[in-house]
Length: 88
Image 1: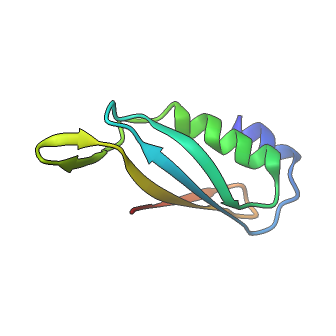
Image 2: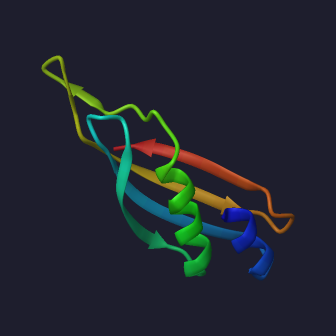
């Protein structure tokens, strides 16, 4: 999906910033696009991220609890993707 969206996108150095929740079941969901210029690319990135895992939720009192993270995604002109994750 991401590759298809990228084939149809204008290729320049693009940055996408998303916020998401890591659930106690180690899945990632509830995405919020904070920055991104191409909806088709962000939708494709989210679709791929939803299929990944396991993610690592926070622990509180010995229990897994939901946690928030920011995803910094850089799409390079040659279609390579760099992903940086920051747990909040």
